Length: 220
Image (cartoon, rainbow, N blue to C red):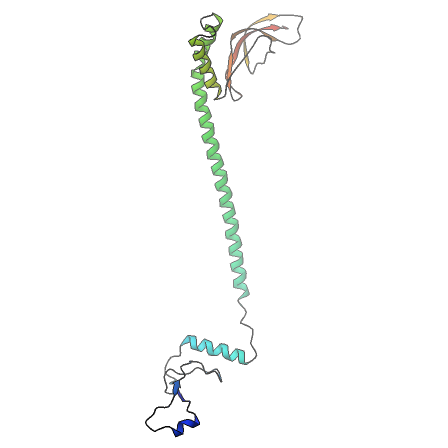
């Protein structure tokens, strides 16, 4: 709609000089909050009303009446959605726990498989270590020789993978670690002890790869 904002002084202006005017394009009437029709023509009831304009007019009317509280949400629907959120949260926690457990099992199996593979390699080298030990006892590998340096380097390298030699004269006999190939009865001792080491035993990280083959001395 167009409103004429002429001043009294405009009457004294020449007839051919235009007067100042402006067009109010606001879609909501600031005086009564009603929706104005588009254009300068009266509103046609058959023409659809812009939903945004209708909502603005409704809010204006509510504010004019003292500000009504918004329509409360459906409490039942809210409770249903909250329950669904809780259910999904619990399901997510279960899935995360199952994932963590599965990952731990896979890592444990991988570590066990790796340890078993290293154990097989070390077991295959025990016969080589027996030859090295026999060479030391017979004087074939003397201190300061290149063979002694090579043998020591081999043993040190295998030790980094957890290989340990056990079984020595004077140790208490342990059937979990030692295999007695001969026994000498003695009344002056209360427990059986190792009197002879035929072959030393080897273990890897507390896992026995081969028991020590020994001779024992002790009660019958």
